[in-house]
Length: 237
Image (tube, rainbow, N blue to C red):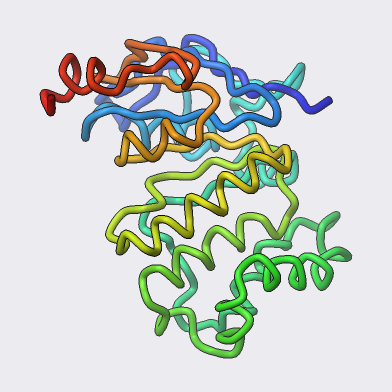
């Protein structure tokens, strides 16, 4: 069985500014864990800290019995952790296919690159049509599909996804969330940071609400009352 991703009493931030305050959560294997909350809650900072892009000032991050904190990001990629960043961050002057192949850069994954490329094109048919096209010329939805497909090229154990629906048309968001739900059903462990609370809860197994750098609510998704959550934390009800 796959290992759980465990975040325990983590503190992290930017220079002298601390953002995360003793954050603890567990992403169970084969489940989709949604992290929701208002802007500035620390959601993206948490994913960056898990991925080693920010140093921890306290706490630990582990995958099963393997400590991940203090490992460089490239080693985390080798351990099977993949980040789908907010803002996409593609290599615009490279083709769609070249961007995908970069996703299989870890040495032990390169021999599987062509097989995974076929799998990516099967999951994202539009990318096959545009495989020779420069990534910088894609639409927003196509670019988001590409960055997700690139993250899957190394066959990760844990997929960290940051605000995938940001700036996308509703029909594209529907397609994207359908793919995330399919990946969850296939047994991939997913940690999803998402601005659309209802959509995130609908496909999640567990939900963590962050506010001011802290986890203030943790519930199974089936037990979440969206109206109450919005009224208490977002003022939308």
